[in-house]
Amino acid sequence: MNILMLSTTFPYPPTKGGTQVRTFHLLKYLHQFHSVTLLTQRSAEVSDAEITALREQVSELVVFEKEPDRSNKFQRFANFLLEGTPPSVRSNYSPAMQAWVDQHHEKFEVITCEHSVNEIYIRPEFRDKAVVNVHSSVYGSCLNQLQTRTSEYTVRDRINLPLLKRYEKRFCRKFSNIVVTTEDDRAQLRNFNLASKISIIPNGVDFTEFPYRTGDPGGHHLVFIGAMDNLANIDAAKFLTLEILPAVQAKYPDTTLSLVGARPTPEILQLQTHATVTGRVESIAEHLHHATVCVIPMRTGYGIKNKTLEAMAAGTPIVSSDRGLEGLQFNAPIRALRANTVPEYVAAISRLFDDAELRLKLSENARSLIETQYTWERAGQQYLQVLERK
Image (cartoon, rainbow, N blue to C red):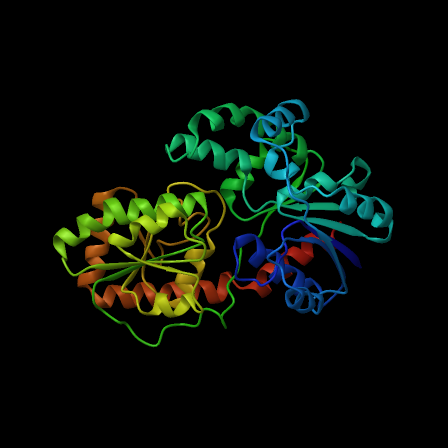
């Protein structure tokens, strides 16, 4: 089977973010069994060495130069209003990439869109052989940010919300097969396309990058991990540092916190008076292993959270919000402690600080869950089943 994978995000190295990680591991798995051609774009940060490394993982790699978006925000909104395509999708669109797809699509049995922004390249006549791999609902994410008051620009998002609903409904109807990462997203997209097959395929973990810890460090050290230029992560880091941490320190004065992740924004750097801001690190797992508790206080952001899977794989006990645990079974047996308010976070963190046996139980149960349910091999097998039934 010849498979064409479309990814405007360059999926290498598979450590830069959720989109890169998911796309890379799925294409790597598919390439073991079928011919895979990847169409992608390179930005100025992508090196020739990275292109060479990615080429080894596919049958054919076609790379286009990412063109800068020279429009202003008023033009972008006007285009969104008139055309119905969000600026985040339009800014990644490449006419050259579209021309390649139009010219070569007939030689492929399956075309996959790795992230919904790539749906723009799908023509109506591709419907029966096209699959969209929706990493998270754009409408659901915007709605959630407004509901939780975590929106960066509330007025803008209130205006955008009905436009995003119209857009997502329109693009979902272009596909006979849709892939999502959680039940929440499936329920959301089911409203937009009752006829499509919607499959849940969660993310996995690379165990070489996230080995299980060798021991419990004890102490009172908290950690939060994630790309520090992501809006949902910025909100979570600020909530943890400015509201949860002081309340925990009132009970445990020696409590420390590390915010671990690349590309910290000025907002994150301002938190350095309260916490350690690492920036990019060689090993996220090492920081997880040194922490007593990993706190994941996500208040927004749809889709399964790689940070939660990675902390579970590393064996670091977790206290997380419902949003951070989305798509995961965490109660039976107990694999994480749930919290959504500051008092709930303080109570859960305190339990783990005081109970080494509970930390061990969460650590072992969480690692076991990842080993059996959240491997990239399992995700790849499920994805291949979707593609082979096209």
